[in-house]
Image 1 (cartoon, rainbow, N blue to C red):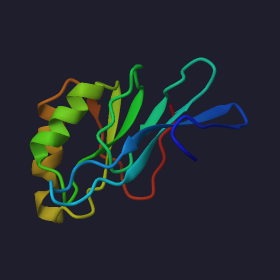
Image 2 (cartoon, rainbow, N blue to C red):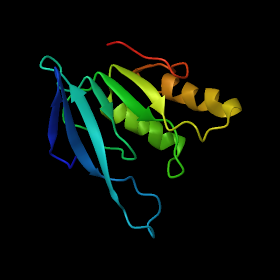
Image 3 (cartoon, rainbow, N blue to C red):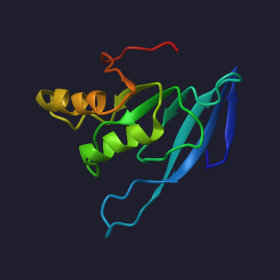
Image 4 (cartoon, rainbow, N blue to C red):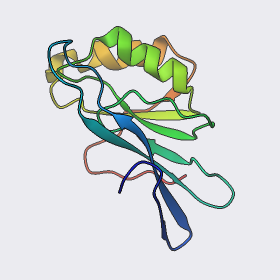
Length: 129
């Protein structure tokens, strides 16, 4: 998909938005990145997966798969991004690089410093919304 494309699968619509990867370093060229909004007729943005971008959509998001960490990201950027999107609920992604002993620190900041219902899901689990 390319930014602006839409794909319908059953009752769901998947929209490609965003377009640019987050800045890793000023000396490294910024590459393309697509974020995805998954919705239905009632809620056009039920779920957002931003990929490796900090894209803030123009519409309210129900559930954000929010980057909790990345080689290019500080925890302050993760908190600011979650505040900017302000979804009803968020689940962390990209947290595999955080040492298991430190995850509580990262997840605690994302939970305590935002008004979003931040939920850490068990590995290989599913959420219904």
